[in-house]
Image 1 (cartoon, helix red, strand yellow):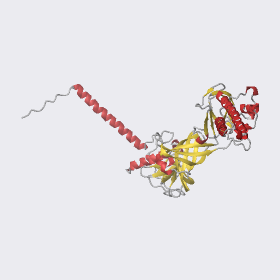
Image 2: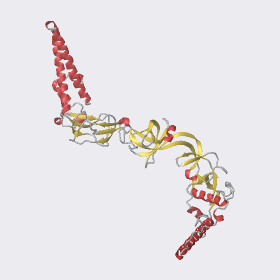
Image 3: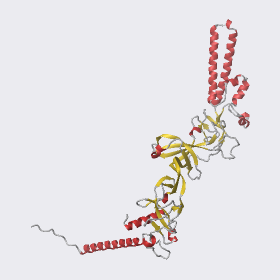
Length: 468
């Protein structure tokens, strides 16, 4: 017969420790039970009572509300009554009106303001040189053809001289051919052919010299110089491209043939300038940036879930951050792909602007400073659908009480009844109520701030009644 295993006897210290653990467990359980009883007795309000320290009982806090004259009927347990106005005010409950207005289904997306990329120009000198004079500065409004700055370059003087030399050579070849044509009976046919070939070659050199100046932006033509004498040609080509108002402001003795103007390509505003007098410039480095701000782009980043709902021509409203102004336009472009980094779809709208009063004379085509600033962030709303009028309440007024959506309406001076509703389209901070309000006609006001307090009380009543 197997013997029982020997169990060592507990020492006195171990017995005392075990008894202490049991005592601590009993005390903890008693305290938790007391807290639960106290919370149940006060409906977990702990001070919804008056200023005298009296705590309202369950019957005082949430009795059943009976419909009075002109008040909607409320089901038992679906209403909350406060013992006093002071107790109600401490919960932060506020009433807001029910609004009736058109329902708009829209997509909300963040966006940014950009310059119209079709009318932004980064300008650079077409030949190497140095800045001789700066005419326009950052923020200046310019017209198409205005001189922004003057560049001094030896290449410009060389090309002008080549044009004059080519023009003289062409005239000389033409005169030689004319003489030979007069005495062609006394000269060999080979000499005539060589003279005609030389004239064609001189013409090609002249055309190339003309084209080189045109490529620099100078308004130079062969026809305009052929009828001039040599002195007039030299004087006229020395200031080629310089407008008369600018010439009147420059000392004639300081004007050289090496000056090349940089023009504004369209009406706009100078938004960038990287040039000072005497600075060496390179053809590859932009020194001026001009933008036409009469039209600005708004580019929205739409979540890919809404991509299929967006279409060209849909109304769009944009509000810059920190501004109360809202700008209206329509969707003019939708990207053909989703951005790889943000996984959003880019949608663009064009917003026109007019020159502010006092910035230009009547009929002036120069655009003034736009109210929309480039690189400004904001929020855009694309309208997808617009229906007839409907009842709308604030989103925070609609609460889920565990089994249905409800709003709380006044049912007395300090009482509020829960009215079941069916939410519809969300429009910003408002939500549509589909159909009729259950339990009676539509109310004029519902609870906005503090509606979550009433919902919590209704759910607590259901828990006590065993409905949850």
